[in-house]
Length: 95
Picture (spheres, rainbow, N blue to C red):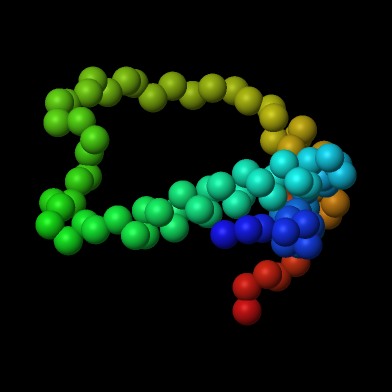
């Protein structure tokens, strides 16, 4: 599936992402490649394949959860054109 410049600009606008002119073509090519790959997956015959819920049959050891202090939310929110407290304000895109 070929993604054009207009589609990339619309996605960027809805996502509140600023793209440089030289990035638009790169994003279009990357997104087109991803969608082509998904189309290939959709064509794969999986009728006689058992569902898989884990790629490894062995049990992997679990690690203990640890709390990590991270102040990157302020950096992310600095890119928001509109925000309220710690939340992005975005236009409604689904009707």
